[in-house]
Length: 325
Image 1 (cartoon, rainbow, N blue to C red):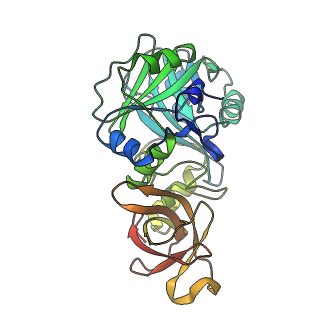
Image 2 (spheres, rainbow, N blue to C red):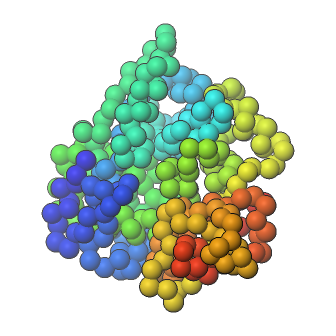
């Protein structure tokens, strides 16, 4: 989905998984500061939107998701995963129930696969599934924003801000009204996500990632709920306390012109660039206060105090623990 807000002055298109919306509008650090201060809004209209309605919607989703949702109160936001039979993460959704319908948004382009899986699990349950991506756009308002939600929008409110499921035809009018402040690019949104150590599907995950490795236990995985696909792996790793890999936060050397990007290798500084790869950069950002930072996924046995390097330029990287070894 290509956003109409790309026609706004200064808009620079994003690349990679965020293609279709603006990376920034001309001043990356100003946009980050505004977002941190609770001003402006982020156009996330490229994300997929799926709804589930029907009287069995919550009890049915409870059987499929890692989160406890059978008694989810209206307008209480949560997030959840769908795992493979081996416990690997296949889908991540941010959801809210409005009392009649569960609204969820997911990574751009992933809504088709998500819907196909959900359709395959309907059986005799009284649920109706719809891909609403062409009808609704996701807009993010940061924590602290006092901007009113437009009429017709469904609001998902969390500690990090509000996600609006906004009728797509009203996206330009929402921006033009200016009640939410200026539009801010996804690079600002990503920089603050990295600062908050929050994982993202497809960035902090690969085909074999399990929830424990990236810190999704608790926020997206409920450990006292009933059975779901992949639960055996979740329970075993939780009881043993030994996920194969762990998420770390990295402070990168700010003297380098280029900072490591998604997929770049992480090694021990003592071994140099010829050393064995111990992990990879998942997301990197130039933060308005912290400087160059990144999230990375490394082997569990990498010492928490070890000095690391990232990328083929051997950028020095000081780690902070996100998931304990």
